[in-house]
Length: 591
Image (tube, rainbow, N blue to C red; front, side):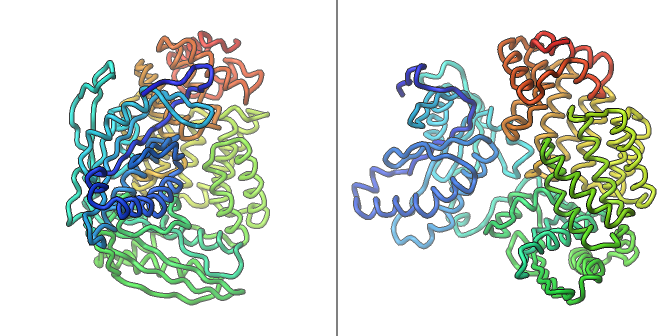
């Protein structure tokens, strides 16, 4: 494959998917017109829609093949699986020999021409991997595997190292969905080796059937509380809200959801609100078979919404685990807001809270302040407001560091005093105590939160950071990986990747530290604060040019920032902080 001129091409890191139709020449020799028609239909109805759905860019089509660029390797693999299963699932309707594809995926440095075409080893390796894949299968490079493992519930087979033509180094190859047979095409799904042995469930966003689109947040709030209540049952494995909400407004089969999230059960439903009247419908589905286990509707008035939520929770738990005791339902109750408008404002604030971006933080704080004016004793609003203040400290957004520290701890303690057995609120207090460097109390709070709710992805995330601050990087990595398993599509997942990168930095594995933080930056390219720890990782790994470029990106969003500003926002040990300072110094950040 020829290379473009460096003068007309830009370089960037990307995931590249290469695919072609198996036996295309043979099919064309038998029925040229029919094969072309089927290929056009395949592209129009399956390939192109799914590429768009998974945020890919179709670079070009070449006869029976096509090339796609993705910013995220997770999106690339998810798209490949979706494509293969969609083609296999529809092929039983074909009277002629079904079309099959081979797919190869690589991640690497590519060159992009002015017309959008792409070149380079990143593309060439994807093409070689595609040729290696079996019909209906997917082959990916070891680099892609390292990026997606633990995030996607698929079975990967290690094929070892292979030497490809015109590639100067051996490539580690992993495969999945190899040679899908007729049984799999008819809808049988591969089970995930990571599926939990106990009851596992995902609660999908409930459809808002009200005429008023503003009631969307009311429907979301109902789901939020059902997930929180179910999470309190220690025998359950419950997928976090941030991952299940990735399916909002998407038409996806429960079988696919069950496979992607690694769960046995899916709860779905709808909410209709008219004035003070409310109707909630819910149905529990076995994700492995698609069979409905029960369906029910609940009528009431808005003031009774929490009682309706508890009825749904009790029905779900009773259907999955009939021996559950009423006392456990009672223990799952939390302090409820006195004002439903405050509740609605908190639900609106949640996506902004988890964005970890400056403008989103300001919007979250505005909504939470309004909620607390309506209901000053609402502990969830108080806890989230505390965490918003905490973000200002941690990410160098604070204009008054000492005041923000005092208010973060005050609000977090006040929330915990009201809801002392709420795992989310205890996690916020643990995070606040970490910020003020009261590590012993922080450990106690996070351990208690996890004993109450072992399914809390965020509690595992905060526990991972706390272990980093305790100079315990190996345990920190385990906790971050647990968080990613509980919520693989979480918008906060990139924060776990930053945490794993920092754990490798603590352990002096600077190459790995940079790789993990590069991964986080690919997921959230606008999150400039990642460069605070990425730049020193580059510098101490000997990548001086990348370190200086990283500092340049940091200073675009933080003009005038200096090394002491960054260090006062961190909570690592003195020895680790001195290495961060040295790395930032080498990268060119002013003292």
